[in-house]
Amino acid sequence: MRRSSKEDDTADEAASSPLNVPPSDQLPLDDVISKLGLGVWTLMYFALATLIPMSMLVNLLVAEFTAAEVEFECDVRPALQSVSSSSPDTRTSEATTADAFLQDHAHSHASLSKECYNITSTNMSAPSYTPCTSFIYSNETFSSTITTEFDLVCSREWQRSLFQMLFTLGCLCGAPVGGVLADKFGRQRAMWYGCVVMVVLTVLITAVPNLAIVFLSRFLLGFFTDIVFIASITIGMEVCPSKYRHVFGTVESLPYAVMLPLLAGIAFLCRDWRPVQLWASLPLFIATCIASPLVLDESPRWLVSQGRLKEAQAAVLRAGRINRSSEHLPPDLYDVLSKTHKEQLRQSSADSSGSLKSHLMSLVETSEMRRLTLVLTVLWFFEGTLYISLPLSATTHKSPFLYLALLGLLEVPGTLVVTPLGGRYGRKKVGFMCAVLTAAIMLALAALKAVHFQVEWVVMALAVFAYITLVGVSQMTLLLTAELFPTTVRSLGSSVGFFMNNLGYCVPPLMEMLLPEEQPELMLLVYGVMSFVSACLLLALPETNNLPLYETVAQLVQARRMRHSNKLSDHTDSIEP
Image (cartoon, rainbow, N blue to C red; front, side):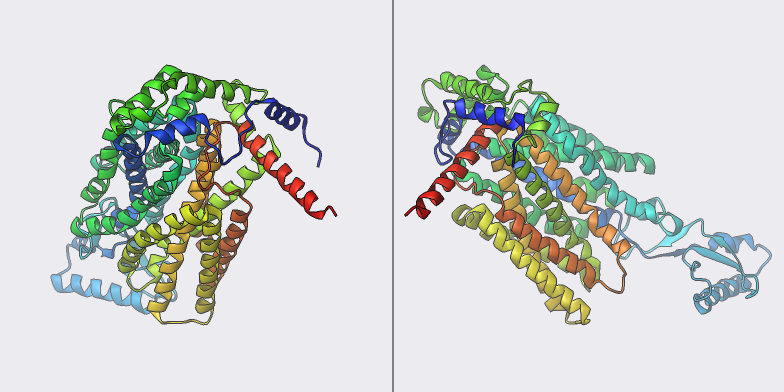
């Protein structure tokens, strides 16, 4: 296939570069980061990569408790009081007759219910009714929810679902912005200001008794959550020594496992939605303190890419002091950083302005980057759809609280097993096996649903095991994304992936609306196909285990083309007589 002129320019530029480093060798800046070791300075970034996903999970699932579906009935007292001429026995008789009418004629008046309407006349030929204006709610499970406080029932029930969707929609809009802000203004700054705004929005949600403000704050909370999340993952990967990157994958994934049962515990102890929201947001409050510029340094990789070499040197020296590894740093640190920056400039594409347009174009400018971007974005879309599908199916089980608790508790051993396997056997192999297992389980669940299999513990066990394997797919996809995209476009590439991930979150509710309710196996069949395609896509990606991070797109293109040329050369040698 004929390459475009821009591809040829990039290839020629890469070929003329003095950097001819095999992917297994340490690049200068990667070597400096590795010499810092794993100390307190590095662990602060690991802590943020733990706390911020915890906050994200809280807001993604807290609506199950704060905007829960609550049993209710129409408060008939205002209607009965209006019949002032009636005796108490007559009013009681009218209320009883109305209830009996709705129960007996529900088939012919399906749009009516005694929870939502007052029946003022039980004449079968011309029944009359008025919508309820007040309701009596059951406080057996929750003492207060958004549902009960704002009467989100009957004709307003759709607003309860909207409350859940607004956070996801905010994440969807924030994902593409997050990468741009992190690349332009810095990872630490995007994370710090984003956390501050999230704290303000959380307080607004719990303090302002206005539903419109609550909805707006919920949307903006999702918007800034993805900005902060992208920055935290990017900066954490950039300051992590290469031999500890599989550990970082564990750290980033464990919050999902820990926070799910904790959230259920908080909701069990605190039955009021406001305290639940505030207590569950504690990880966000802690993350805001750690992300402060008084505590956290900017990513040295990003500073070098921006030519801010003195700041990068200061950040590395401070990291060395805190990690007690200063003696391992090169004495000519500034020269090493300067050399790295010059190499980045030399290997930049023809449009080296560093503008958003040039960064976006670099994601699709060469065949190597086009393939990488396409595969990862589709993977993220499927991962988002599959990952959220299992928690959202909790109501299909007899004990949804037990089901959700099991998902969280069993994700911990799943994470601790799968991530080290990725460090030992490689990201793509482990991700492939997890995706294949997920596909097999989803198809098995579809078959059980099709034959109306009723043994609850078997279905629940299969669903929980599918969730564990999905955790493995998610971890490997996250690591591959952060390790494959070069530093100059890492945040932008990650934001594109997270955008598709959030888009995938919208698929399960949409499928529930479109697919026939009496055939639930169809959804599971679709999920099985998605899992199998994900396995094939993982095989199409290059392995990154224990390899250095690329600093520029040109470095990646050069390495991929050299590897391809070496394979062709080896193949030619093998067929020669």
